Length: 308
Image (cartoon, one colour):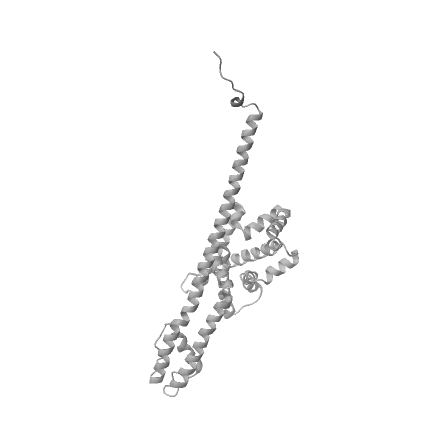
């Protein structure tokens, strides 16, 4: 209760403009019409920029289309830069336990803060620094990080992040087992197949490529063991991979089930609390109405039988 109350106090003490900016970038659904419009605009801008990255790589468009792409990129960069500045400005409201300067440093150094910075800074640098074609291509690829910003507006993506955070130890252990199987299979396959087909299995890294395609059941068919021992190693790798790959899937499934149950319980708790508050308000208003009527001389209390 202390931290939410402190956050509410700091928000209430802020200016009206800063409160609107805070709700617009952090809680559009509870910030009024303008905040919801701003959230929808940023959401659409993120999607449009993801489509733009693929469209710019296509050849055959007229020159005016590429000019429109460039103008849209400039406008998007400016919009994301303004959004970053606003988030930096209202970060003291998002972190009420910290001072204003420390809250801004915390946002700037957070994962989402760095993503927000990368969403506009490379494109803005290109306005003032001469760039080669390869550098422009790199900037276009970096712009794909803008897609991560969409996680703020999608509950499902946030749930995935919470599951990864809660199950990180189990997930790391599962992938370590997967990595151990990959390395072991790649080294054994290289040692067995390299003397027979050195042009195919020319290094341990080639064996690792074979191991990954085998473990993930991809099986391109470009690398195939031809010796009896190599085929036996491949057989053992495929059998073990069934169990090893199933471990992360089970961890993720259990994590999602637990997360959804927790969210449902929290929603039910909030609904019950809201219903109880409404019932209390209704009973209180009913008591006031009845008592007021009696004090004013309710005809029911003062009525006497009519005498003939």
